[in-house]
Length: 183
Image (cartoon, rainbow, N blue to C red):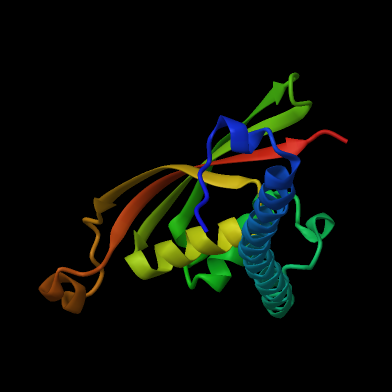
C-alpha cells in the first residue's frame, strides 16, 4: 500500500478521519506527560509547605523555651532600664561597666511611628559577652537594630593575668535604633 500526502489526498474526508484522531491522541499523550510534571511540582510544593509548618512549630517552641512569647503581641516594647539591667545580667556584664548616653526620639509621620536612638558604652568586656549582649537584645526586641559598633582595646587591664595574655578586654560604643509604632 502506497500512501502519498499531497493536495488531492488532503481533500478527501477519509484522510482527515485518520489524521484528526492521531493528532488528538498525540496531544493527549503530551498533556498526560505535562500533567505528570506539574503533579510532581505540586507534590514538592506540598512537601515544602509541610516542612515550613514544622519549622514554624519548632520556632514557636524555641521562643516559648526562651520565654520570648509566641505571638507578635508578646514581643516586649523597648524599655531602657529593663534593657540595661536584664540584658547585662544575662550577658554576665557588670552594670558598673555600662553607661548610657542620651536617648533621642524622632517622630516619623509617614509611618506613624517613633524612632528612638540610644548610645551605650561598655567598658572592659570580652567579645563573647559582647556578642551575647547584642544577640539577646535583638532576640528580645524585634524592632531593635544595632546600627553602629566601635570597638577599641581596653587600656585598663585589672589583673596581671590579663596583662600577660593580652586580655580579651575591649571598650565598646554601641548605637541602637528602636522603632515604636504609634498606637
